[in-house]
Length: 267
Length: 329
Image 1 (cartoon, chains in turn blue, purple):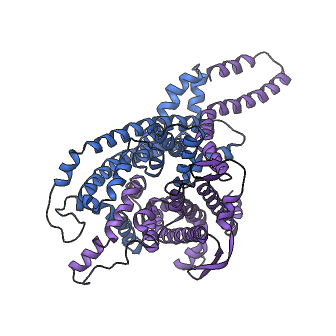
Image 2 (cartoon, chains in turn red, blue):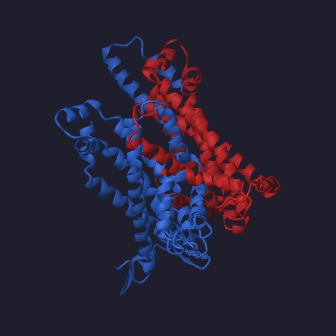
Image 3 (cartoon, chains in turn red, blue):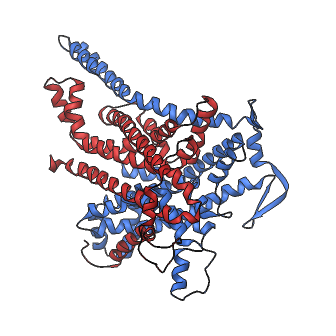
């Protein structure tokens, strides 16, 4: 808590209220016994959640999203780790432009990435759209995140530890598994979780690249268009929010603990 | 990797100084070779998933669509479609657009303005928060940072949808105001306009802007602030002369992090923009979708990316980013 209560303290608290209120309205109205999201609240009900549990199409979409999310998180973390090790452990000529290019998906609007991938998949290679294409698109989005997280983790600990292992006769591979990887582990876990949520929540690329199999955000989008299905939409949205919040909190704690223990005093 | 390390060990012993010198050169060369070996998979991946798609999109912008067929002869026709002049000007916000197809230019200008508005709002909201985190907060900093970052990673779709519920005709604000007896019938100007898009974008992106500003504020040497006070600066002067200039790199980073991606945003204008709040992302989507003119959509994408890049360069030049970097070094 702050030292004294002044304008900025109130601003800080006000800001958190502003940041969270809109999102918290979703769970609030999902328990409300009305088909509109309006005040005054009518009464408490779990109807919408019961309807959700019976929706088989929804379950399919959830399964697709989870499978894609897990594959994407493992693949992008592996690529991100390799690149982060290369950048932090070796002096690479032309490092700036290479890292800059890898980070481009962070700033290019996803609609442009989406149509570009669509053109490549459909018109250059003539492959059928599928969850594989969605996964590929999500890997493109997640590699920059993974690399950023892992770079800060790898920069945080002492390179001498790796050199010591080498001097003591470990080869490169064993040094990686017994020194580098365990030290990078908080970053790796954080990167896995962040990539998973990014993929799990991503809509635009999935919209362009998915074939018949829907992912959860696409299913959610199709529900948003029907006002009469608002209660179920709210219930689904609230469930998604709760799941991703839990994942994000774990990931953030891992990442920040990683950075903290990397300080010289911690070693 | 194991093999290269064995090689470098084997070549070291039993050689003279001249040999040792070339060995150092060899080792250094090996070092970057090994670095590149590690980097190669990611570079290849990015070539396949980023460079190749963007290149094929760019190539497509020089082709033309005829019904279901694509004419692959090189032409600038699509770009001409976007800028072809006309004698009659179409007016939008009082700005004349003397073009044959003014809709494209108008939607680009509108997207830039909406994005610009949202970016200004984001910086104004984020700066005091970053200041609070950097200067006022003593304990539980990690907790606060996590609280700020959570929305950053949760569903963008849902954060935007929440605003649709808030601003809608049958929405939270309208029903709340009626319930309180402040209005008789719902206000219909809240949702489906550019203003709703700006509000929603500002809320959805504000969390992204805090961290860069916070980091640059946190880096400021506190003794500079004490010096300013000792030299007789009042708090407000001290802020204007010391804190604000030193935090500009963070402000610039945040500005770009919000402005660049929001120009092409698709979800927000689709959900809360309505017909008047359409942005260029929607136009690109419809060109690739219902209107079945991918090449024109590709040209529009290329033009948007070019304009944004130019604006960013202009902005960095205008704020003297190079000088700022030199000063930091």
